[in-house]
Length: 415
Image (tube, rainbow, N blue to C red; front, side, top):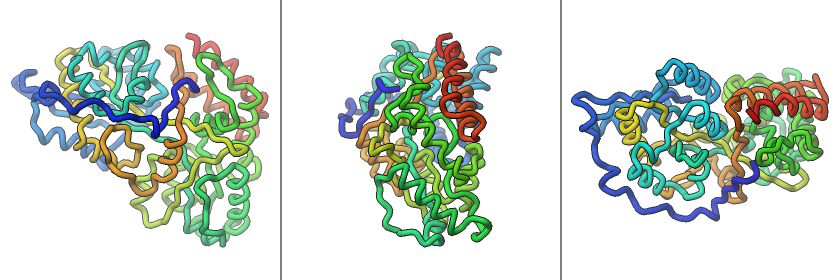
């Protein structure tokens, strides 16, 4: 949405370090540890587990369990069922795009209702522009955990195999991207290379298609108004679907795309900057450049997640706040920075490998990704993805697909 602009240059330092109240142990909750379960998209092999382990090692009287529950959509769906059954997760890693859904449908707790002193101390360790993103209907419902933006990843092994120039600009355009993809496919396609499968993958999900629309001057939602069928939106989605129409893009779901990228099957991928960590660990060399501009213009969106408390049990809610207080410390933020997300804390954690493009886009300013309003916002996202898929697959024209998407979205976002 265009009302929530973020700029790295505009960030100021946060408030002072935690006071004594934020650092107190939680032994008073019970004779045995209070157990806080976190519904998350990360397994035991990811940096988030290291954050959990570091907290548990402090033996505060709270024991935290990280439970891998799948994607943001998987977690939200499971949370909806568990809330209905009266057994919500104590904490859930919640995508920015589900802010309204989290508060209005899943009843995410207001931190100030749980512990106002800790709430102030927690937010004091984050860049001030983060707080509005986790404030929904006047309630502070989340600790801003990660921020990412879609960038362009280039497999340099495939790039060089195709004989292309290593002198790749940081600031690229859509026209440049399609031209290079065509050269790659001509050089490596038709089984001329053992691992090559597709020249490009633009990630058929809501935020890369949204980025194309915004870079063309449009929005999916402008405030509370659906504008996904505007002339600008049509121009953006037409460009987005162009590589598929040319046979340069083998469309696949997000998980399959990640596996294919890691295996060296795709030469160019536009997707989350949070892949910096996993890609840096591979033997294949990758280069990160900015998301393609449209006609020299770029109005990039951000994604990521926040940590919200859903338990209605006051004891467990206070225990959850104690863990979140640790998450806001420099120790925890340094551990988490290994993941590759942009730094949203006030601490100087340095720029990690393959973060140049993400930092450049953050410098230029980011808008929040589409935050689907209404109690049925989760359904709205699915509707959007389905129509984008139909457009990229050539089932409908961009004009027809966006018009029909708007008609289906209208009752969902107003509910």
